[in-house]
Image (tube, rainbow, N blue to C red; front, side):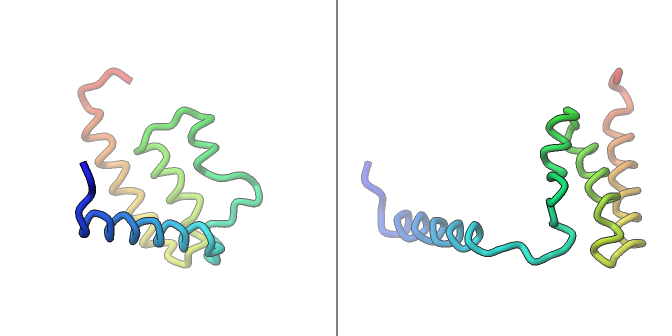
Length: 90
């Protein structure tokens, strides 16, 4: 089925956005992956989404300049993780 004009425009916009994202170098220091990425670490350690998010926030909290705020967010993620895993045998 041929795409309509809106679908074609949306697909083209998505392609352009992707091209910009992959061509623009990351300038934020907290995304420096010189020693390997957190994503690779998480994959190698078989971390779930909660565990990855908690570790990511702790590792980056000093780099972003939002130390206290990031640690409070981390605490909240831990609370949610505990609540949602309460009845599971881990």
